[in-house]
Length: 159
Image (cartoon, rainbow, N blue to C red; front, side, top):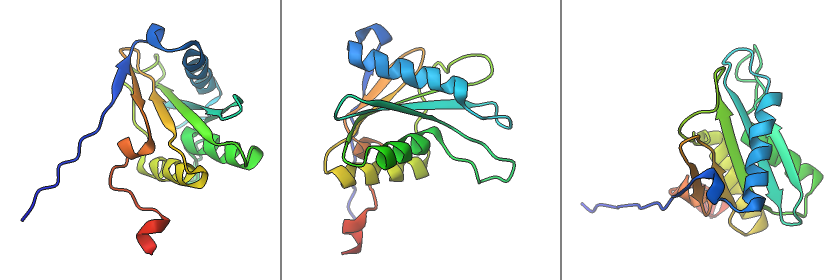
């Protein structure tokens, strides 16, 4: 028997330590939470993607009484970016979440389905997508989706 040890590297920033561009992106994700449709969970998520040309697109979680017909903020954002700007890679994806009271103290990670879509976006453009996760006590930065999905499944797995 062998052991496989995986190590992930996450940087943690205070909001004021972010670059101006990253603060603008994070602000867009936070603002997007106000447009979330979350009448059942009351848990609002917003995402903002900065594309290679500097364009910022946003998305929110959209719930539906016929669960699981809703969709997460990360996927609405990436699907919109990929359909409206098909030749523009996503350089950075920022994600923020809040409950009915306020933004969360700690960042929340994307669900498994979102991680897989994020991975496919990276593979599509053949470049890493940086991820920023907002929390009031700190913002996590990951250099690529591989940090969130170290043992991933993609097209190369089927060869």
